[in-house]
Length: 100
Image (cartoon, rainbow, N blue to C red; front, side, top):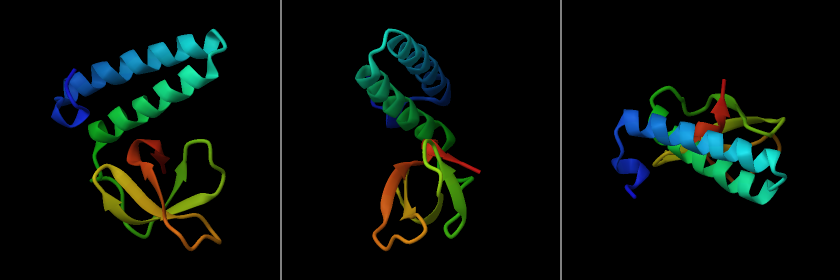
């Protein structure tokens, strides 16, 4: 199996679809641990697919399954590091989990 960083955009798109389908099956079967693992893998594949180009340091985004806005401080690979309101220590998320 190839690393996500070595895949073409078409391969990443196929991988995201495969992971999404498998995750849905795990969720329907009640396997929430398996679902969570596949969901995280999906977000990593999505991160490599979209890249960091559309995200801006200092801008706030919504993070999947989080209510508070997340403000990006810096990038490390396909991870955005930043803070939620009231936090001082940065937290990292794959950029595939961020939404406008």
